[in-house]
Length: 87
Image (cartoon, rainbow, N blue to C red; front, side, top):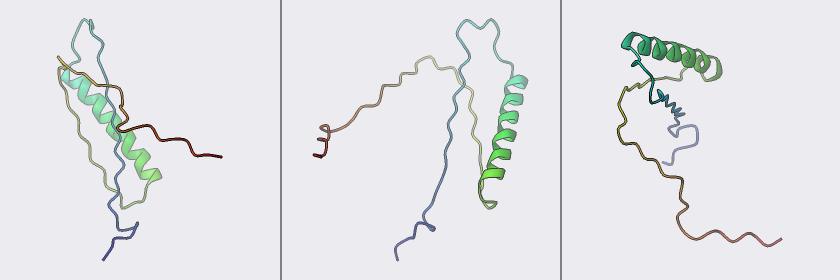
C-alpha cells in the first residue's frame, strides 16, 4: 500500500546557531546560557502551538561547544548546468 501525502512523515526543522564573538572578555556563564535556551524554547513552543496543528510534537536540542575548527563550504551544484528551455 502506497502512503498518501497525509500519511507521509513530515518534519519542520529549524536550525539556529549563535556565535559568541572572538575576543569577548568573559565566557557566557552556564546560568545565562540556560536562561537564553529556556527563553527561546518558550518562544518557539508558543509560536508552534499557535501556527501548527494541536497534535504536533516538538523537541529541542541544545549544545555548547568550542569550535576550534569549523569549516563550511559554499553550496556546490553537482552535474552539468541544465540548459534553459526554448521559448
